[in-house]
Length: 73
Image 1 (tube, one colour):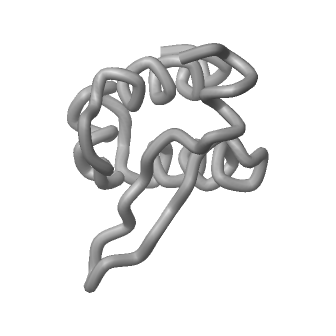
Image 2 (image 1 turned 90 degrees about the vertical axis):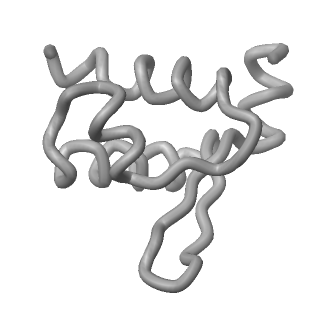
């Protein structure tokens, strides 16, 4: 999968979720390595489109209010 498609696929996946997802969930859904999923998730966090919280040993991610306002979802 081309690298520039990964963030779009991550946000599309997050849009369908009712609760936070882990890096492993994204990795399995997109068929990319854990590292690739984590890097793109953290870039989305840095851009403010995705929120993040560490729960135990898990990194959990969900769409931010900024994303919902900007993309109307």
